[in-house]
Length: 123
Image (cartoon, rainbow, N blue to C red; front, side, top):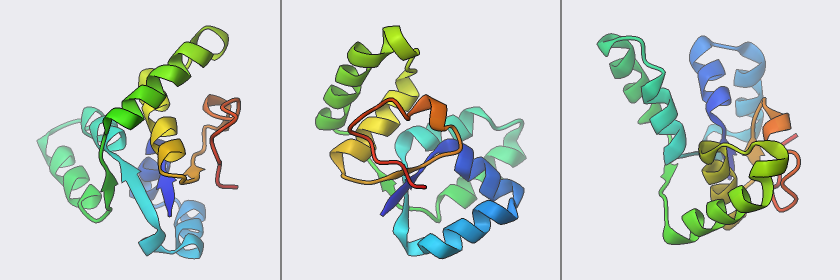
């Protein structure tokens, strides 16, 4: 399994052929989302129709739920990296979700995650 960062989902919705091709290579059955991505996508909706479109699209993907283990790990990551790298809460939760589920992260924002030693990044 590979967890898709929010920016990947946005590119999929835009029809980015490069990202679509990579998902085909990975296999649609091998990708998963964090619940944080669902929240971020809903926040990005510009109107009710857009929100409905996003919801229908996101319904296609399995999602990893938050757990105490993930929140504890995200807290540790924020403590460890916020002052040096300005780690955002949503990115900390996504990284923690990957770490705790031993799942690589597919993201276009490598700079937001590359310093987290425990995190595996999809290349």
